[in-house]
Image (cartoon, rainbow, N blue to C red):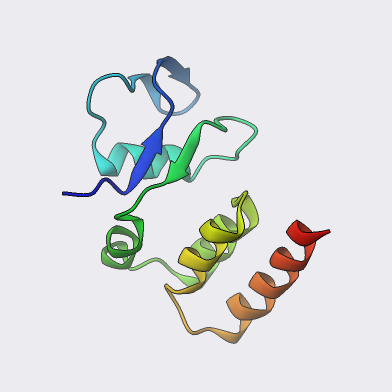
Length: 103
């Protein structure tokens, strides 16, 4: 089974989440709650190979997807998040974010 998120190995004390030891297995639900945090709080998490299917199962609102897109650091992350909805609002924000990453 492909993991939805990858976290750099280590022991972390994350605000609002608690202590996490990523050397052991971290559940996708806990990793998703970490992924929702601002990247300044926890920058060591990335979307994994199974992220698209996991995030589709979460049935995120447009507002939640927009906040995740704003938080994304790579074009690949943004493309995965953009595939979750067909909203014109999200499409516009995705375009702006991708242009910002290219510059």
